[in-house]
Length: 298
Length: 298
Image 1: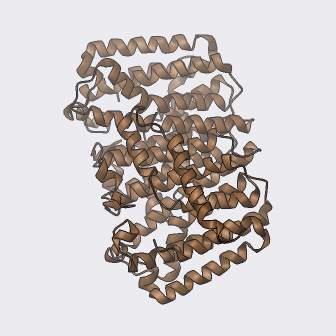
Image 2 (image 1 turned 90 degrees about the horizontal axis):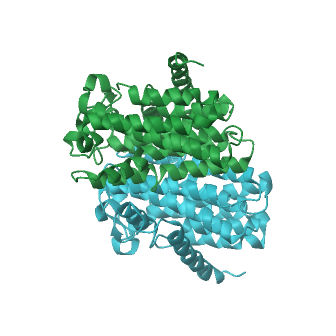
Image 3 (image 1 turned 135 degrees about the vertical axis):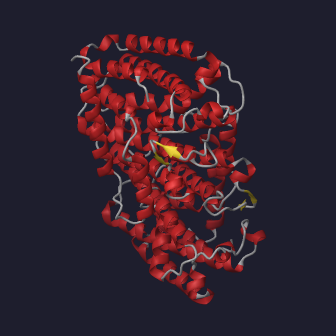
């Protein structure tokens, strides 16, 4: 496998995700139609699909059935989509633009966006429980558990709360890292672990290595996000540029400056590669994905 | 078992639930503390605990271990609590009083209430997956699935959406019933099924009978709620009285009038008893609970 295969693979995963989500989300014609429209609006038609790529990439390491990986990736993407819908609400970030489109509460209304987020979370757990994702149902219960923990108050939702409390404050670097480890890192780690669990058992050491990879990639993703937010413009990003900085939110660039932030992202990338050293060729896509996350321009 | 045992039993279930939720919710001292405080505020210290009683009552029918029922009941109560927190938000019902206390977003803030609701939902699924609730892990996955379906867009969250769309409209009786079957009925039915699944298999027919019981009880609960909302005062209800009527929301009393609504509740109670006929003495608490739901004054 050469580096040249990554663009085709990532396009394939993104295309497959769109089809899978389209199939697994309730159809618009099913009542309550407006709620289902809002759920589909929030989950379909875009996003970088980084988390699904992590699920599929980890699944290559454990030799998992792609049909299982599709469902696990859909669950992760639904929770990611719900978190964006709620994060964009007026009482949170009050954002009007997401992926180049009006945010869900702008396109629909606040109440519908709130409920769409709630129902996307429920649907994620429904998918994880109703499809066969592991040979051993105990492993599948463990998958539901780790995913719920990653989504909840000591994972993603907790990270949002830390973020809320941080607006307008000067954070130290460890405090900023703690926020991101929860806010985006928890779901990224869950993506890798879910993908791995869909295949053959990798053992504690194997899972720990994948988790270390995911931790580095998750943080690098955020550092690069901050750099892009600082330097980008709305047309490229598909969302309001400079928004975090203007909102007085702490960022890696505000703490470190852009050059130092870039260096930090490079270090995290190096550690991510190190963590995968024992996996050989099956981890090629995860390596390329890490490279992509650090070098992307949007 | 005589009818006299019900008050003691219901107090015991309510007391046990308070202790179980206190134990299973993250402690306030664990970061993010404000989020955990809000989750505890929303889930502890009150409510009628009707859903836990349904879980425990159904568990008596299937001879389930109370340690399992505690966890299943906690999951249901967490989802119920999250739905109330989100339902009370300004973009939904905009309510300031719940169970005689300020609503979560009034006591904390909107963003924290939003996240607390989100995290309560995650925690419910975490509990259902991490504790052993059934001898067969496939059955436990089935429990997660039915609970997620009951919570989502074709269950509780869908009912909220139907409710939103109904404000200011005149609904027919079947439309009103459809709303309640989703909004409150889905979680009530899930409570009974989860409790049953914690014990020995009851077979399709047994589960169908319990489900019929739950459907009647759920609807009766709502009819009585409407009667109480029409007749009650805030001091007794612990929430703003006449609010649904004043908000132009359709109710059983606005469609049927109070006397006819009372008669309908009585019919539902009769059908609930009929559904339990085959279960004999172990269903005594479920029978008494149905009686309580219809005769309660708050």
